[in-house]
Image (cartoon, rainbow, N blue to C red; front, side, top):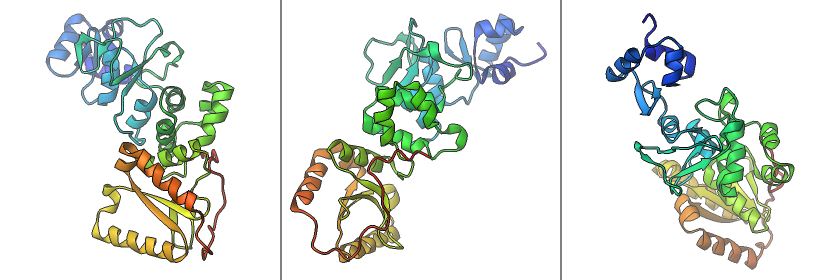
Length: 310
């Protein structure tokens, strides 16, 4: 055969092809089996082949029997990854013989804690062969994930390169009007971390109106501001552990305290593993009330749920 089988899979099928498609392209069964034995192709499941190096989440979704979808499709493009992320797979509504994402020899049970199957694959466009579009992924996330998780991932995805970002009008079109009007108002591309987004959404769900990324002085911007005096900073070991950053953080907190703000630092693990304790601290501070005569007010204004998605 003039063109190697693996090149056909790459050039015509985005790196993933069914045996039937390769036979229609002029490959013989011998050509296909030889390419597999030589390592030029990876057998994903019966009758389905991938070129080496195809993104593992895409391969795992294909092994199940569908395409990468929802939160998985956004994180694979570079969005924030939530804790205990499931593999989300979109399949046709009548799909049968679904397989374990890590073992094509095992059927996927009706209940799988690490896989979410969405039977909406019949709606997919031709360009969604490996993964659903960013906009469809965002809509799926809002429909099938906890709201705080979905919003945090979408906030993050809105800061990706243009071709990897969801388009809010397209997301809205994929949702019914009532769902879109409520959920999309929570999305805000200004959020700088998934933890910050989750905190913001949970505070809104408690009836508060937090503001994010607020400049309190010419040099100090804070993650979350509640009631114009309570600052909530979302910290992580990854970005705040160096001696230089630790000292810088303490200096910021001292400056904010001197201006009359109350500062509460919360970590990733506190937010995701001990949220009730975090909320109890916030509720007690708010019940205690605004400090007397804070020196400065926030320099910007805005709503808790601006929907400013870029």
